[in-house]
Length: 154
Picture (tube, rainbow, N blue to C red):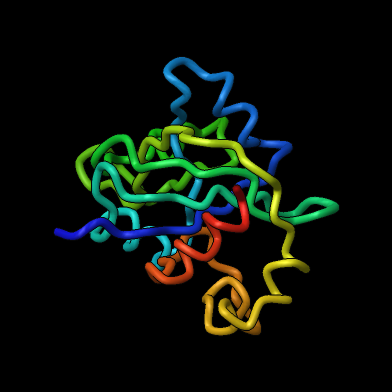
């Protein structure tokens, strides 16, 4: 399959891009996705080496905090089985998991590109992130959008 590109949202109070940079091998598990469409993007669409725009959400200044890549194939999200986790799902079982995780590896920090700046570029007017009502934590990014954002970050 050709390389694909994704935007993945994380609350920086939970996992920030700096946390990933500081992690062993600059890699972290992406867990806690509890939306079926976002889960399907992870489970059915992502491949090792795909590009990721690491987006900080639910913070004072939301925006793209860095560039990452998919570092593993999808696997069952362990938090769905942990009754002490906020992501626990009592309907999930190890034999029939409902939710998927994946590993993400930091590639480059670059310049922080906030949501206001993203909205100011006509080249990004059709980007899913900028669509009215867009709330998915994982979404595809078009190759032209990816290339344009890379130029903004550098």
